[in-house]
Length: 158
Ligand code: ADP
Image (cartoon, rainbow, N blue to C red; front, top):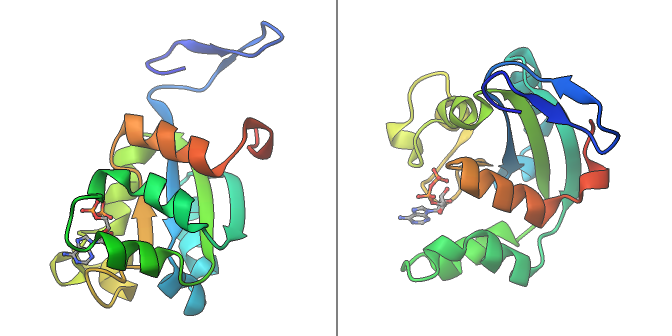
């Protein structure tokens, strides 16, 4: 699946996805959905050459939010973060593409929009460090874990 190897389907058919093909989890946070940014953010992903293989708008149940952000459980902003991410609908996105994990992180820009490079999603649209429009998995392990939290296999395009 990675590094030029083929991905075997249950049928035994092997599908070659190319070099460093990855999947990651992206999420438009409630501030972005509220501000009608969904379509233009999805368009950025498609323009970049990524494939949207899963998509849903949902209000995240509190328990799922706590699981998703489990690594931040001890941080002082954890309560605020869970309140915010459950405050309205989010758009959950499964993306596929070459090096999409780091590619998405680059498109997002720094956590604090004040530090985000010009042209990134956060520089263009985010307001504060807490309400920063977009989430993207930090690494391969988080990508697999977060995709599993938000999507079943049958919900994703092959
Ligand atoms: P990123 O989303 O860029 O990977 P982190 O994993 O460090 O950033 O933090 C997760 C999310 O927690 C951030 O996107 C932001 O919404 C929130 N957050 C991070 N730091 C703070 C902070 N100091 N105060 C409030 N919210 C924060």
